[in-house]
Image (cartoon, rainbow, N blue to C red; front, side, top):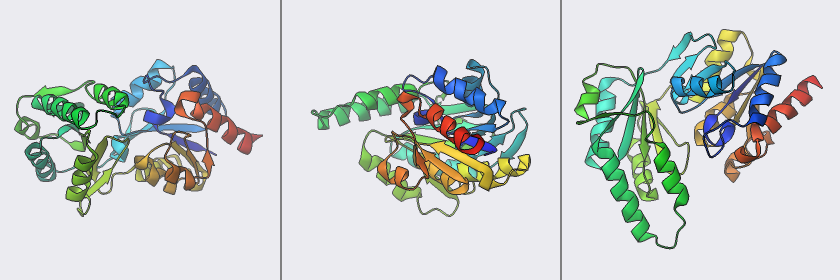
Length: 286
């Protein structure tokens, strides 16, 4: 095993958005053996680098669900962007339907200021319609999305920036609204639609995926994809599982994801990445 790609949310990170000491130690052990480590995430490149910096390691990064790939030296190896016309088509529909969304662009994440009000109204309505349901996770996840966002007064300001657009992230409390988004964009020849948790869908260029990102990185490193592994927990990791020579599902992954992986490890709260890395190192290095 020469290259291992690891998802962040629901995988390497615990519920408090931290990399545990056990996971950090396992990453360092793997690197000591000469194994290349890549973070493969829907988050931005900067966020991924910051998490690694906190535990004192440097890794390759596949970010924005594969729209961007950087080497551990910080060199950009791949950039797959949404053109302005496509981005405008997406955000104008989201505006009409009053969704909360974020646009990941070069160096920043942009969101219209009114989106937060729309989302709060949607969550309150959802709570009223589902009085017996435990919505603590919904509240927790919605609270996380307000990190490091650049707000604009009008959504047109995002499109006026002449920027490179990598991903549009959409959050919704209601499953029917999530389904409506998939229905609207799922058959597009130009777009890929994936989900990284229960309350979102994410839109990228059709050629942007964690799987393609892993393939690009492996090629740049001169590593066969047969000598790669992928660890993840959700549907935006499926392309990575299909590409890698060995796939590992987290214990907190859905049953259908686990069923299609070569190994199932412990949950993200129980240091499942450390467990998986130790098993992989034992399997390949004895």
